[in-house]
Image 1 (cartoon, helix red, strand yellow):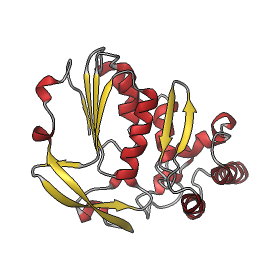
Image 2 (cartoon, rainbow, N blue to C red; image 1 turned 120 degrees about the vertical axis):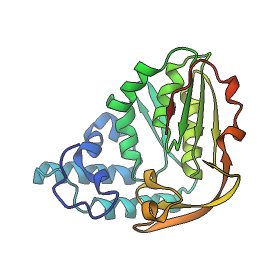
Image 3 (tube, rainbow, N blue to C red; image 1 turned 90 degrees about the horizontal axis):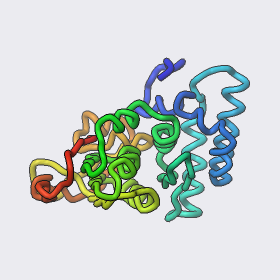
Length: 238
């Protein structure tokens, strides 16, 4: 990732770098976005083009303003994009959606690695799946005889992943909207605003800046699944 031109004062600063936002300059992709997000896309194009800088100043404030309007108008709607080979659903209030498109559309290094690990009929475990970029890719690679199991405790992201796997998966799959740990019960999940990838249960990691907190169930993974019935070998992304 290109070096940011400003100090990283917020944990989501990296999401406003041109290396993450570059795809919104692609008309084929940006025209699929709802009107409010096309305003954000236009701002990116003008700012990067006129300043030559790689960090989008004012991007956080603009995205939160526009996405909040979108959510108030359409609280149950997800962003839907058709990429090369994938149809993906995204949480419209989560800035990390821009990196998700990078992971799926640009041949991201992590997704390329999957092709070296997965074969027809394998099982893929995505623990802490977020939007499920890797689960989506794996759901095609393992084929009709494979299996994908994804765990994501954030409800909006688990729902987005369900929609994406319904649209993409060639295999059977299972999504668990909960956390996994060394106990069964309920925990408080801390979800940083603007950086869903840092959600967790430890304040030192997930509550260093503004965050929301919800109660979610937690299960022991060994009790949650019958791993002995997994097909093939089982690479894990977590």
